[in-house]
Amino acid sequence: EAKQAGRHQVCYYNHRLQEQAHKRAELEEGIRLALEQQAFRLVYQPQFDQQGQLLGVEALIRWQRGEELVSPAEFIPIAESSGLIVPLGYWILTQACQQLASWAQQPATAALRIAVNISARQLQDAQFVDQVRHILLASSAPAQQLELELTESLLLQDLPVSRSKMQQLRELGIRISLDDFGTGFSSLHQLVHLPLDQLKIDQSFVAPLGQDTKAAAVVQTILDLGDNLSLEVIAEGVETEVQYQTLLKMGCEQFQGYYLARPMSLEALEPLLQTLKIQDTDH
Ligand code: C2E
Ligand code: MG
Ligand code: MG
Ligand code: MG
Image (cartoon, rainbow, N blue to C red; front, side):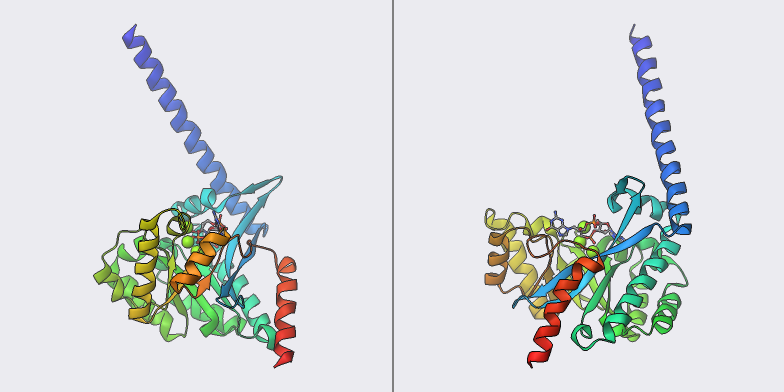
C-alpha cells in the first residue's frame, strides 16, 4: 500500500515537473516570437516631487499575448534564465531612449527623465556598456535623464565588476537607482561605496506605513541615509493618502505609486504632459 502510494507520489511529482518544464519552454518560445513580432510594449508610471510636479516616469514592460496580459513577474525570470532578456533589454532601452529624445525636443517635457529596469543577466553582458552608449548616440537621448534601476542582489553577484560597469555608465552621464532598496540584506558598507544617484524604497516598507511603527522606522532610516550620502530617495508603491502623507511628513521628496498614478500608455500620459506645458508658459 505504502509503496503504491509512494509510487503515485513520485509519478505525480514527475508529472508536475514535466508540466513546469513544458510551461517554461512554451513561454520561452512565446518570448522569442513576441520579440520578432514586436508584441511587447512599454507603459510608463509617473514619478512626482513633493509639490506634485511630474519628475519623470519608470518604463515597465507589458506583453499582451492574445487575450492574456502576461505579468513581467512571470516572463522576466524566464527571459533572464534563457538569456532572451539581453535582446529584449536592448529593445526596451531603445524604446525608452527614443521616447526620452522625443520629450527632450519639446520645452515642456524637456526635463523629464525615464527610468529603465536592468536585470543581472543584462549587466553581465560584456557588450552592455558599449550597447548603452550606442543606443544613446543613435537616439540622441540626453544621458543625464536616463536612469537605470539595478537591484542589490544583482550588484552583489560580482561586486568589483558591477562597480566598474556602474562607473562607466555614470561617466556616460547616466543616473543609477537602487531598486527594491532594503530587501536584499546587503552590507551597507558595500552599498555606500557604490556609485549611486538614488535609493528606491521598496513597496514592502511603504505598504504598512500608518499602521506599523517599525516599517516607519525603516523608511526614516533610509531617508536619513539618503540625506547623509547625498542620494535622492524615492518611495515606490504609494497606494494610499495615509502612506503619502506619512512619507511627506518624514521628508520624502519623490513618490511613485497607484495613489498618484498607475503605469500607463503614452496616450494616457498625454493629459499630464499637457499640464506641464501650461505651467511652463506661465513662467
Ligand atoms: P519594479 O521595478 O520594482 O517595478 C514596480 C512594480 O510595482 C511594477 O510592477 C509596478 O506596476 C508596480 N506598482 C507600481 N505602483 C504600485 C502600487 O502603488 N502598488 C503596487 N502593489 N504595485 C505597484 P510590474 O510592472 O508588474 O513589474 C514587476 C517587476 O518586473 C518590476 O519590479 C521589475 O523588477 C520587473 N520588470 C518590469 N518591467 C521590466 C523591464 O522592462 N525590464 C526588466 N529587466 N524588468 C522589468
Ligand atoms: Mg523598478
Ligand atoms: Mg521596485
Ligand atoms: Mg519590485
